[in-house]
Length: 340
Image 1 (tube, rainbow, N blue to C red):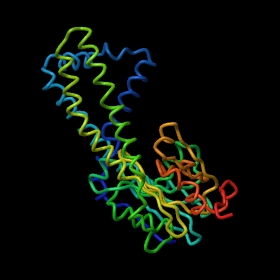
Image 2: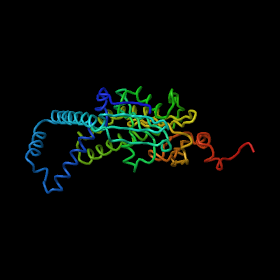
Image 3: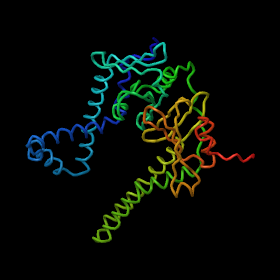
Image 4: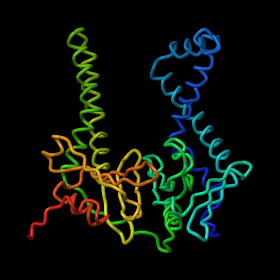
């Protein structure tokens, strides 16, 4: 066996840059709340809950809200560090002589996931927004036979949040490529993809809040709500535009030798490298707005991972030709020979 990665305490610094910093606190609080309600306890009648509510309401919001966020962040960081240490202690990733993978992790070191060579379809380099800002990434194997979708998402992780250079090295090791697969210089997507992301960002994050506040301010004759609507638009619009542009710049696809490379996302950017012979089908998805913009979403179906990986908003005129080039034979019968 070839050892690709082992436990390293220095990876702990990336644990706070994950979803669990805030999401974990909310999930834990929700779970405790449901347990208390199921046992007949009314959480809002507990003494410490009432005292917290009174303390929160007794101070000015500009004091209590930052304090609450700081406390939540501190709990989230502690929880993320503890969860990382508990889950990834005694971690060891090995590549078998046959080309499969074995991942061992956990306090006992006996919690193992084995992926056979014929189940391995590729690898995914994941860079959520905070982790990407900290120069980190994690790695998942695109593989079948790991259970349902939720089980697959847990068992397919072969490298926890780590420095990006290490993550790229592990991706190359998982694929068995000495120098790795070149994921730089991917083919860009039409400018229509940028317009669609700008419209979506403004339509989901800016416009609804502005409309609600403006309508309430007009109906209730409260100028403060109108001021809040203007403030929201001025504060959130630049952020929405920056994220929309980042999402567009993250789009890319290419064929690299035996592999198809697909990249997309901003909050959860993912670069997926799929074996071309693992692609079993193509799906072309569009909408009336996409048709007018001349783009289409091409999905490569594979027997593993998320079952399908999308090349979002690529040129509709090139989609079928690219699909035939990436995985020959699947769409050939639907193409028209213009040279005939």
